[in-house]
Image 1: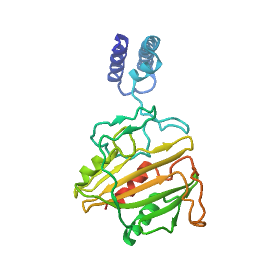
Image 2: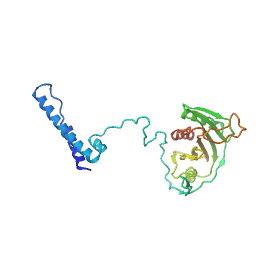
Image 3: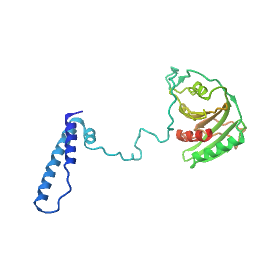
Image 4: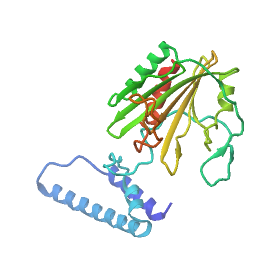
Length: 274
């Protein structure tokens, strides 16, 4: 710490400690008091100027007094995003890089493909209710699909994206299978994970972007103790089916952002995990 910085702190402490209630107005005491306060202020100001010259304005201001930061104005970049899930990351070693130059990594272990299950009526209703609850300002349009999956388009001010739910089955311990599939999305950092007391494991993978077309996908997987795996994916493109399901639709983004933030995807997983 600079000597000038420490001297400034000491002067400030002395100034604050020496303050007394203001005397009654008028008279010689008030005049003398004002003179002393003015002199102390001038001395403190001179020390601030010295620190500014040596250490820079930001250091000097922080040395004088810590002021709570006001909320950032519109357009100001912040380091923490309220849209991210607050789950901790899985404690797993990073996988080997693919060496392609992109931020993609080769899975260190693989759990293999699991068997497809069915999205029953109860799960379909839970999914629909939970989806509408986490995106209250968006319009959710459910697409008629097979019993093996759930598909819905989500439209808000940024455009239309889609959300899917598929059910699979697996054998083994939910946590062990979650570890095996932790890097299935070619992610280079471990997924965020939430483990319940009953053994249910939910993990959110980082979003994947496919350039140059600009497609984005993010998914969360829920591994249940009964051997069922729920996989929810959110995508920045519309389903392209519904009105003309027999017509092939080119796969292209219909919005810049995903229709659900990571925090909303986590809320959806919490509702489905129960």
